[in-house]
Image (tube, rainbow, N blue to C red):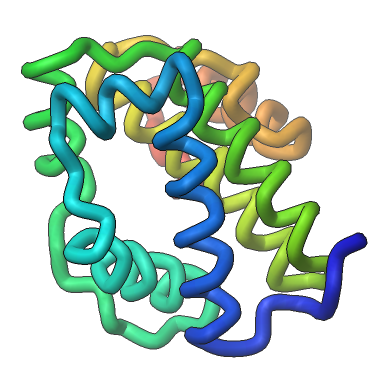
Length: 156
């Protein structure tokens, strides 16, 4: 049964650590993290906590380029929408298992947006299934404005 909403960095740490332990054990994501990237979880956790603390609490603690990191991974093991969807699925389940509330919902929403954006930037495809339903309407409107000669997409 989920607990309280995400309140602080300690909650983020528990969420991120639980997520990565699940992802490492996943048959689809695990080999990428463990065998290809050889991710050192103890080193990686503070960075990911910085990222999520910045996303959820506007802490300004994340100062890296997430796209470049994923480009490096993508060059070693091509990432695709199925892998991003699995990442979102595990993240969402982990959030739901641990937390409930507005920040928990924001964590799930932002994860979907991050997955969509990384997939788009790495593969050049827009997989709408990665987006939460409200954002799919934004994407459709964006496509219409691109056809009309304007372009701006207010997604992550």
